[in-house]
Length: 459
Image (spheres, rainbow, N blue to C red):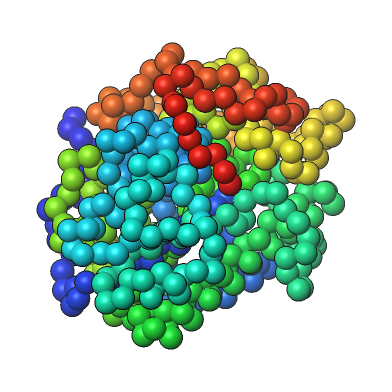
């Protein structure tokens, strides 16, 4: 059947770039794709992210390779799926044999840096020329770059938990949040969501400072600014899952010299293609390690080509999983490996007021169907959803004979992708849970697998 999920040419060069652009990638930490004004949230105030959308290209159908922090970031920077990087679990450092974007960009004389959150491991972080933990040192980086084109990766820690209530002068009102149907709509959950909104607003304010600094240095017009998230919001049935709430990301590209304002695309995009697209843009040959391809037409008018399929996965993240998914514009197929336990959760979600509200509702036996899906046990091997009719992925149609052929085709595509990208069996690399899936309680400190000697697990 061929490699049907690779539909773009590896040799298609982005045309008409007048001069080498600066590149600034802004990565939110645990931000849901809809939780910005420009993506339709009427309550949350994100004027600077909205500014980037108004003055560039907003993609509305973009997907991550995983809904886990460090594996997601490593996947984006390496152009490889998490299971192929050797760093598929949370806080696993990259192997010393793997190069990332800044290493490749040296060919064109780029000065590279990253701010705050890396989680790449020592070898990955050493490939940058400059690194600071303090988010307020961006202007120092611009000065250090001097006349060279720059590549900057900003790894925000917002809106990651834990939350405090003293960040915003006018904090978000709990009455002005959107509660998805898989959460309990009560006081504790609304306050939890309001805190999350506040942290998004703090990140947005920091982005505004960076844009002002680019303007003052007269660099904004020729800087490609890319904004996205590493995974979905830190709430049950979102972060750490392959449901859209976990793997769908905002994606905004702003480049005044090249991208017309107020552009939008609903084409299916995978972040596995971002690194290839950036190298294609600056005319650097595609490394053999890449499992993605340049996004054809991304910097041209109205000719963006989308994917037919996007693929995602979930591995160890405080609880062990081996979940794989394939998604089209309309349908999603999920394959689960560990069926005897409910869906695994991250420790920060287990401690959240939102999860505790679900536990209380479960104890009282008042969970709705959407809320009870989190606690299903045993789970089924396959899940299938019609996303046009069921965007929250509540109604599993795997037994529906009307979609049998679609399901069988997606099973073939998923197995072929797993084989061609070097995926490993669910029977190897298993790790013990460090959070109780039923109660959310932390069981033990993070225990690294035997083949990992050291890692930086700081937030």
